[in-house]
Image 1 (tube, rainbow, N blue to C red):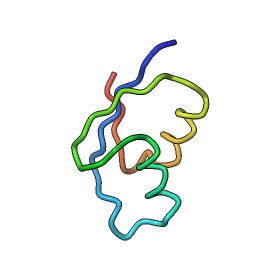
Image 2: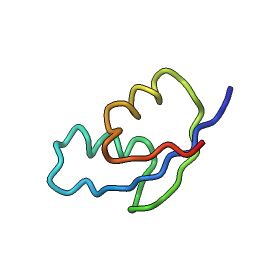
Image 3: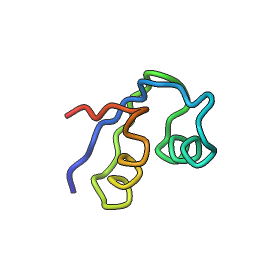
Image 4: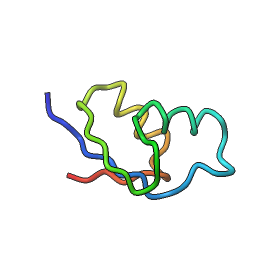
Length: 58
């Protein structure tokens, strides 16, 4: 399958616990980090949940 590059552009400070858990599950450990994930329906759903905290790099 295709892969998606994602960059965390905003902090999770003062965010709900479920959004913090989603960012952690995507593999982010620090701000401005870029991770590469497979394009699966589960990952796309996680991206949509925290789309205000991340940026998709194509």
